[in-house]
Image (cartoon, helix red, strand yellow):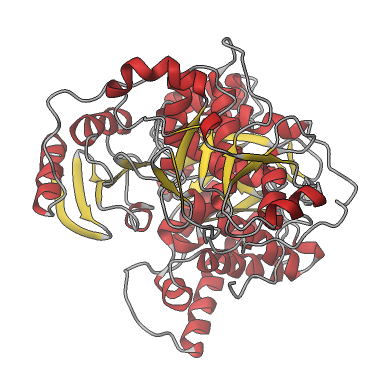
Length: 598
């Protein structure tokens, strides 16, 4: 167990309760307390182009976006926020505007005059990030904090005077050298970075703050938010600031939606989150229906007031990922449990429907037939049945019984806490199999990714079955994509792609698609596609290769965090990326005819 394991990030892991936060006003929109989960997004137009920015803001508001963010790279960009605000208000739209600030305190001071909220990133607002490895003495560390206080305090005073709110938004990819050397590239470092800025704000009597802890890896993101929430509670009851949720650089298409649902949905399931932004490498308006669908179930979710009788102690550390131990067993010729890969289970009906084209399914293969697995389905609240199962010496595959009156995540957590370690667990997305051919696929995707992804982030599970999607091929594809996005089973190229914004130095959507077409057959290789340098090197910590905008029309290429090529012409950069992958021994030629999707 980690050093943080004595902390609690929610009152009860086995029943839903929304975290109690204070109300913070963002313009005319209240965030936190018992208000609905607010939907945010960010425009992509150049902040100097007033008409384009106003148009995008209005389009987002029309789509249901409640708070809109605009980048402000420099003071000159920030000054044009006055014109953008006037254009939006002149069109009769009252949606609050947020300035996104990186690196430039003077830009933040200018922006605060014109918009309702300012977002600052502690890692690069007034701090150093040169990837230096050094030891900071306590005196040197305090001197750095004093320098940050000098840079940050004026913004706090301006926001306090003008009634502006602020988001203290830490990104995993942009922790300062000081934080990295003291705490490492960790969720703890992310949290400490934010709390340092919050303490400065509180010294000035300022409390209109919202916090975020974004990362492209959902497991890191979930751990960071859990730790943040626990640390805020530990600091005291008046540290109950609202939480902004987001998986940064989630990507596009089905993968981007799944990754967002795993990170955001897992935390909403635990009652954490007052406002959300889904970051897709697509037109910003495409983010809104996804965010609204993610938030919708929790607007009507009622807190379970009664404590569960004989509620067990959790058997996992929510602040440090570790897979639940189980014995290795073999089913249908496939090993599962222990350190073996997650297996994909399907019903006999779906298997039969796909049997004639298994050779065309590529990596989306059904592996275990539910009816032949010998799985034991049980209500984890039944103590007698659980005791009898735990008395069995032979390992079994165990799952939660369909039809019981528990939420999926709570049910499987209860099962994991009460089940002996040698038994393996089969996860389900829902506890009522669907036979609805006309069901909206986005809802199926988000529910499945939220429930199964949440449990995987807890380290629970050895196999999974998708019951919410009736179509056999589609349910298989979704199963594998959830495992990929959660890091439980890597079977294809993994992409980290940021959403477009006003800082982006090339067309992210077309470039990402071009890179996918060239590299999509490189199973297990992780490629980051970043529009600018703001979060680039840090978010590429887990990536093998990075493609980052360095200047208009110019691309920098990275191997891990190390830049190896600078200012390549954009039209040459994808070919050079392929050469780089080849030079590092990770290139293989694409098969003559790639397997078809399902």
